[in-house]
Length: 177
Image (cartoon, rainbow, N blue to C red; front, side, top):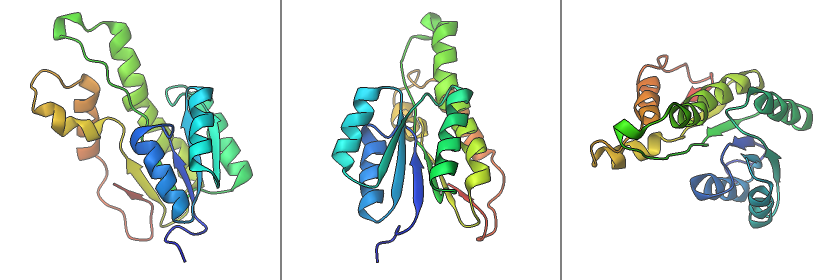
């Protein structure tokens, strides 16, 4: 039996990179996977590459209406989620003096607001023992810190959110990691 047999997973930003690789790995281990992305063509290509046990849902994690629609569809089709991989994230770099309010809002809306509300809106669908995996742009933080001045405000804020999260829950509760 595969490790994820009978499990249902959500992977935001599942059309390329780590998200797509994770979706393929989860399906190969027996999971049914929902992937999200903002562009229909990339979603269709990802579904074709994954091949089976996958549903693509077009949406933007920074749009609360899109998140409501996403979780309503998952609830209707599967009833629960065993794994949430909050992976959607963006990075666009600018010198400190060149950062605009538009760039700041775009970055924070996807990397912080999107991450937070993805997890919040998933909570009602998570049974005891479910897993929440936070990726977004935190995965880039350490490599960027080797180049002072190149990390984005959202990266530093997400690291702060991760470090200030609630203490670990008992083993029979949803895990955040």
